[in-house]
Image 1 (cartoon, protein in one colour):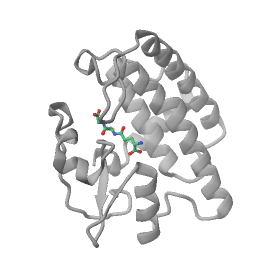
Image 2 (spheres, protein in one colour):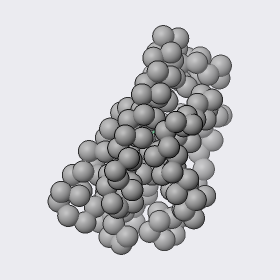
Image 3 (spheres, rainbow, N blue to C red):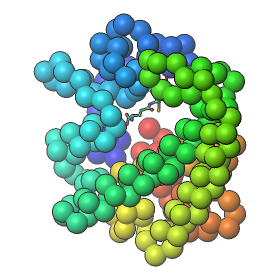
Length: 191
Ligand SMILES: N[C@@H](CCC(=O)N[C@@H](CS)C(=O)NCC(=O)O)C(=O)O
């Protein structure tokens, strides 16, 4: 939204105190996760990619989901890789080890206990992800190619989220470090 200059009223949901499980929020998203977007007709959208799809259709410029069929597909491809191999790996490591999330190893209304082995595996996958990102950025300015896109936003969030498990881009991933420096200094990164 910040990249597109979309101004929208926001309401913070206090995740640390379980507000996502309140009846009021369950009526908005029964999966008890943020974000959710309220539309003008009073209905709600959840799931980040769905929300981004809607916002892109309503505010096409600047295009963050690609400007041609091929570019759109490449951006969605990389965004999927980043979500599964980056964000989910950090989430596994974090949610299966954080003291405050003992019986909340997954998001959502059902309680699941932590599995320490998943935390270990998650850390290993994050390491792999950092190197994969580095390889992709060796010959590309941005994650999905020449254009800054939602794949960069997801990957930047994955790197930032990794700080919660005390992991950061290692010194030797010079391409990913160059990219992170550029994307995290965009004004939208502070939003
Ligand atoms: N697949 C969801 C994931 C959303 C998600 O995991 N949100 C986290 C915060 S980034 C959340 O709401 N966590 C609630 C909790 O930990 O109980 C999406 O794309 O919107």
